[in-house]
Length: 227
Image 1 (cartoon, rainbow, N blue to C red):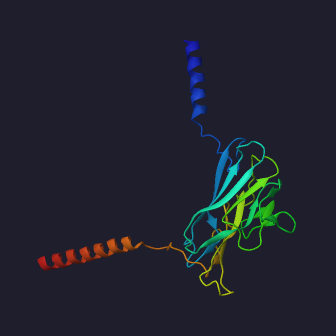
Image 2: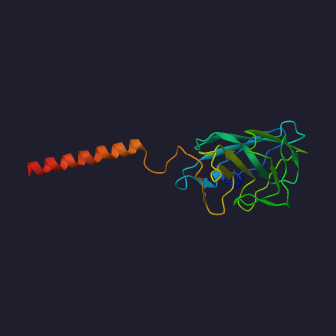
Image 3: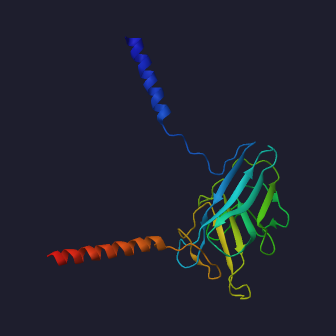
């Protein structure tokens, strides 16, 4: 019986370890030969109230050739209805430099602060509004982009055509990252932008609420009439 009990005990120990949750994968990790996507979804702006701007800027880490990492940056979606222009600035956490047509390493000394999303090791910028999709080819293979103090590996500054492009005091742009903003959320009002997202009840919800109130009033009137 003793050997059987020992085997059962070992089996229980193995099962217990197997049931433990696996360690979470590092967000900025991408193995050689893989292609990985990182979504930058935290904006620093709002139009009317915080939360009325959504964005998904994708950074595709392409390590498929096993030699040089390519970072392909493109806008997937946003609630901003203004015409998208491009990616003006882009920062990441690695000391491996990159090349991209029309972009150059930002002047100044590393690390680079990107508007409330923390420090980034390298930042690239371009004259004008930037290109809608940019490919940064790194000098070597990078399989891990580290987190900064805000939990971000990447950040970007993206631009749109303002509501009134002839008004020099009006602009429409945002910084976006996969890390958190120092203010805990968007803290810059962008008067030159328009969003199709509105914080508050949807029209359909308001209609249902109105029907419910009307039905409740009718029921009360009927009860009063019976009394």
